[in-house]
Length: 437
Ligand SMILES: Nc1ncnc2c1ncn2[C@@H]1O[C@H](COP(=O)(O)OP(=O)(O)O)[C@@H](O)[C@H]1O
Ligand SMILES: [Mg+2]
Image (cartoon, rainbow, N blue to C red; front, side, top):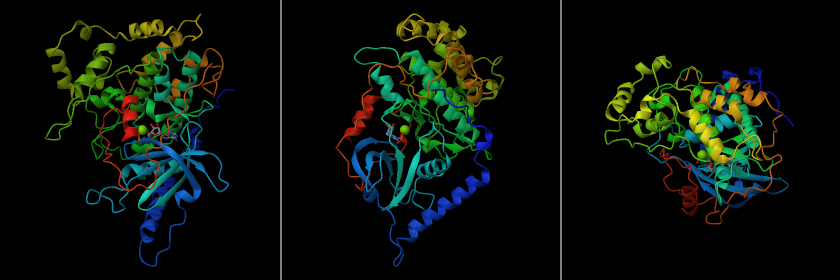
């Protein structure tokens, strides 16, 4: 089966509809507050009336995720994301709902695409929001991890191609509808048991039509550092869909090599709360791509952190700084180590794969390939149909998502401090630690 073409812009959400949506959302929130007043109406739907909680999946940034099954005639499996209310006194909005929950709700209600996670319903209960999603058995973090156990074995090239194609279709849909994801990383890319890719976790997503908000206008962190685009590292205050495309390039590289390509260490904010230059992360990129040059990235010299980049060059002068890009060398050794060859059972992403990757990991955001262009790249158009089931023809099964019984009381009161820390949560070690929390 081949996937259908990306949606045309006629499927776009109109700005008015988004505006209306925000108003109707506000009305829902007002209703919920109203219901607390004496004589107000009582809550219509309760989570436990509609779902049986099977277990606990993950403690995320803003709340917890549970696995559930429908009851009273409602069929299927679901993932219920519970958002805790914002701490009192700390909130700007009187609603007491976190900005992230509101964002995710307003976007997910309107978005509908085969490659974007499907929202089933939203339930407001006891000052908490419960977002009910279709359940997905896997995610890319889990799949990548599985391929490192017990020893490394490459993800078949056809599977990588199907994942990338579906991912780009979902992203094109988001971008066509003026939505930036801003937190694309393997843990946020969900995969159903029938091999469909669903972009998840729209908690940091933003509408990017006017006004273009400043990067520092409220959010402490935008993209998890390993997937953060160079223009953001260089201090860009505005972001564009190119930021998501960089992250997609990093994910493509990680699917092939089973390791994050740019695994930097995050510099923490100092006591004055100034946003630090992410020197280490920038170095990781420079080690593979070479230094960004003003000839090929004209905007570079006017970037806020340009002087920092220069000092980085002055203070450390390893030879690789002054070479050009070594991405091709990185790619070739990745193919070799992964056993990707046209004669091998894993197949190969070949020269087209390299060309696409290099266009995604283009320093200049203006020149970086867009989702629409990427879908028309020879990597996808050459060489056979692309399955909408990334597991098609794959031997062996992937392990099911771990669901624990540690905490399956969806109504448990206060949640641990779950402020977005900006730390990459992409380690299964950390994920399993979180499970035990
Ligand atoms: N629809 C789903 N089905 C199954 N598991 C999910 C689903 N949505 C999220 N998860 C799991 O919960 C984790 C956290 O959810 P996510 O939406 O990414 O929230 P956060 O903003 O806290 O990272 C994901 O990384 C994934 O492992
Ligand atoms: Mg997440």
